[in-house]
Image (cartoon, rainbow, N blue to C red):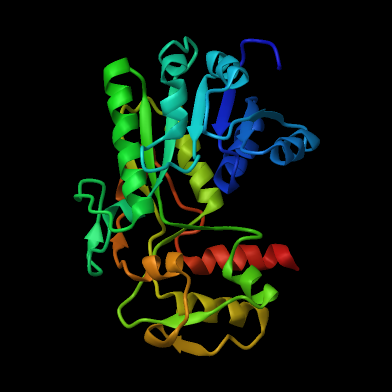
Length: 294
């Protein structure tokens, strides 16, 4: 374990968003440690030159407790289960006693709003999750907020729209031959570029806010088939044929996404955190990804 008293970002769950934030903060002098659920994942992080901790969410980890004691900032993105957040379940006591901890961010989902029939939602809108996964996220949010209030800890909740970025975009799906153009009249989705997630999280860390909830979404909810068509035009390829939602064979997870429709307001990250999105719509985001693919 790295010694010293500098700023340490502990990423409990080292996925796409955590990687983007850690790259940003390492450039600002932070040290970074992350967890993985498997020995193979730990090995990968170590080969990348990162400090890695095994944590599968099924039991507390003594090594993770040591990092919690040193962490100045913690980002939590491990998936919950029916009982809520697994990290908080096993390490609430360690978190309560972490003398250096000044910020804790929890990555949730706009899925907690459920189906809104295409209406706009903001952070004051009631949550009414319709899928089990989103209900578990809502429960985790409530647990983290209660922990923050009762323990006097700064906890902030970030509700993410559909995440995309280099290596994880409609452009990549087209290249892999897995892109589908599903048409469901009236259906729209918000998205958020992974670098805009990192920007927002970094802005939250830099500002002394308290117990806030933020929507992380772009400015333009749009139908998925239009986004696929735009990506295909950038690549100079023919888009996949349009498929009616009623006739498409979709996985249960995809079906649950198409079972909800909402437009997500992102004003709070702009007014409270001063965030300016680098990719306010999918056009700027896909354009930048495409430029990097050449």
